[in-house]
Length: 221
Image 1 (cartoon, rainbow, N blue to C red):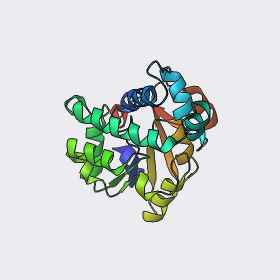
Image 2 (image 1 turned 180 degrees about the vertical axis):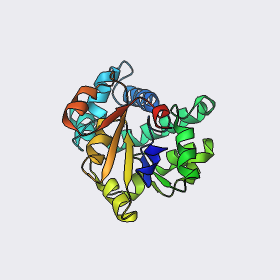
Image 3 (image 1 turned 30 degrees about the vertical axis):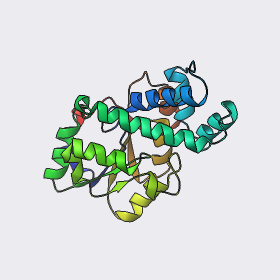
Image 4 (image 1 turned 90 degrees about the vertical axis):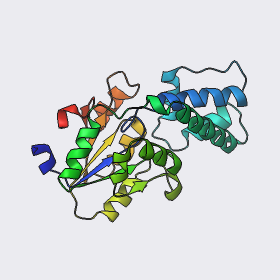
């Protein structure tokens, strides 16, 4: 239990940090862009990650509006969100928490420590997975798109956690370049990068950010 002696507050991103969902985001965007661009539209997973996992906050908007010439890009974003939510509802019986996470959360709870969820996702997405995995309802607070002025890679969400939970020893888990860029801007939070070396931005993250890489939570429990 030495690991748990070091921290009071545990911070989790949602997508691919709590539950594997990134492939649904990819598929939802492919379907969206087939509708808004043309039915033969396709981009590879790595190209998708290069554009939609990014450290410049305007990259996605520029890609949609300038590269793809989608004039009302917000309509495309809303359309994608609707498709994504439909997809995860249709596949709800197939989801599992990331390996080792349930035991890790149980330890946090049993030791009277706290955890929070910090995501660029909509509140409805966090609520969906909290209903699917009731242990997530033990989160002390959820931070989601609607309550943040700025999305990750802006560190606003993590600075807000710092304000909401003062004088806590914090550790946070992120899987993407977007989240890593945001969380490492707040040095008070120990950053754990949970992803494999196959991830498109893996080498860049390991070279440019102060993180500890893990594949899952098994080695922490």
